[in-house]
Image (cartoon, rainbow, N blue to C red; front, side, top):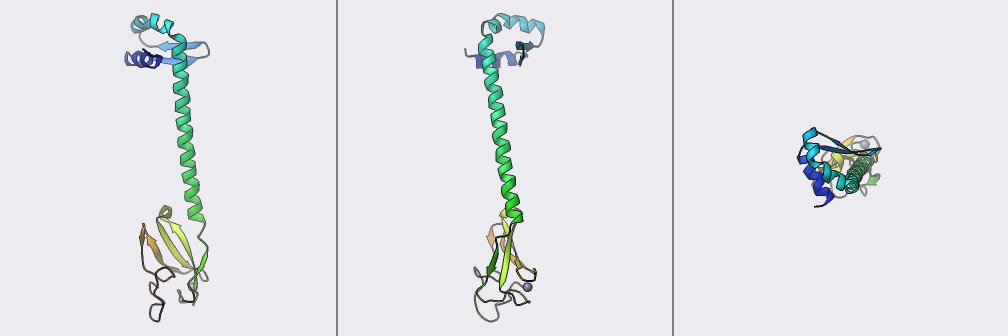
Length: 153
Ligand SMILES: [Zn+2]
């Protein structure tokens, strides 16, 4: 039996095992503690090592989870706050103001894009909506030619 298995057995029996400055601390009904007393004494150091390992694994897991979550938050913030930059439509006016430049802002955590006029800030449309490309004025989707210039408003 490994210390890990003994630890499981002790807990299943209703004992609580923890580390203190003095060493191993066993809490629970005295009668149950008595049943395991000899085995706990015989494997004391292994139990201490097993609990330390458990605590280390738990800390490591939490550290990794919080780091992963932090990276996710930073990525979302960067996406939300930084527009992809001013882009040009190769001469096609996309706004009643006559502008041929626009800025796409990622929204919905990057699943959608909101396109604004780069000159007057007017809302143009959503070239991307929850992962689905939509045809609005712009170099990716707008057919060039008269009558299509203000499509999608
Ligand atoms: Zn405009």
